[in-house]
Image 1 (cartoon, one colour):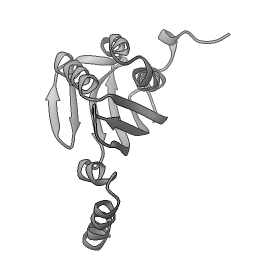
Image 2: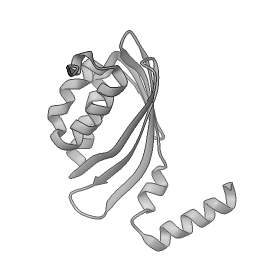
Image 3: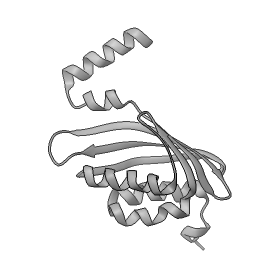
Image 4: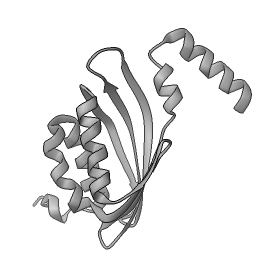
Length: 147
């Protein structure tokens, strides 16, 4: 007997959301209130905001901006209270190249919903990735400075 979606563990439901938004786009946003607290804090390299309404608006904005907005190879590890997703994200505006980035998202939950969501990715590396020589130079430079 298979579990209904509602009875699945939170990490699996979040994974299904990422997979669903890649295909159904805006229709998948109905899941957000079931997965995230009203006062969710969401952080990434360029955003540190609070609130489910604001979080939903960021998703809507991304769906408007990107002709392609896909999450592939979504994997999840952890517990219902603390889990991580790793995945590959692919985005493309109405024109121009496709940008791809390997990412991870850490989720902290309480009472069955996420209250802290933090995305990790390299925004500059993502922007230069479609441009071979620039991407190569970026990797060499940061490899020299960091590694």
